[in-house]
Each structure stands twice: as C-alpha cells, then as structure tokens.
Length: 132
Image 1 (tube, rainbow, N blue to C red):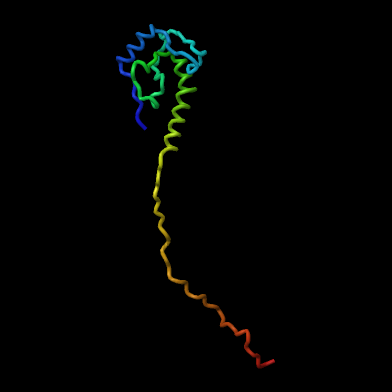
Image 2 (cartoon, helix red, strand yellow; image 1 turned 45 degrees about the horizontal axis):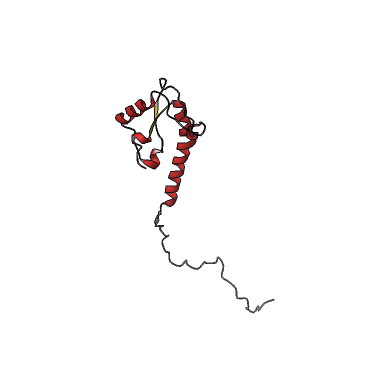
C-alpha cells in the first residue's frame, strides 16, 4: 500500500487563507445537515482534510484540501474515511488474482512391509486328526 502524502506547506497556507480562520467542513460527511457549513473558529485547532480520501484520489491539491476544526475532522475520519478505506482495501484484495504454489513433500516411498510372522505355526483347517 502506498504511503499517505500530506499537503504541502503552500497548500495548507492557501487553504487557511481561503477559510478566513473558519472551519470549511460542509455537509453530511462531517455530521452536518445537507449543504450546511460548520463555520467554527480554527483558533483552538486546525486540521487539513483530504475532501476525497487520499487512498482513493491521491490528490493533494488545494481543491481537495479543507481547513477543518478537530471535531469535524474526527467525525469524517471515523464515519466516512476509515470505513471507505477499509472497503477499498478489501475490494483490492478480492480483485487480486493470487496464485500460491505450495509444494508439499510427499512421504518417502517405502518397500512393501514384510509379512507378519505368527508366534505359533498355523494348523491346517482340513488336517485329519489321528488320535482321539
């Protein structure tokens, strides 16, 4: 799996400037109503979120970067990003055509076992008894 790439300093600064120090989280992915924006102040903490999951998009552009508050980022990560990433990994593993050749050593071939030796000689079933 490829390593996650973070946003460049230039991209983070541009996203922060665009946000006017207000959370840019919008919509249900962040636990808000449809089309609703958070607008929380970012003075107490800011995180930069890949709007479209990095594992799926590999897009570290400003258009895919949102300056969001910690609460919104945690909500999206737990409820959207982590399940989506897990599903992506599972689908890629299921789609892989993996052939594993396993060579199993067979036990050494032995010679035929010797016939069993009986403790006493066998009597014939049809032997005639001479004495009574």
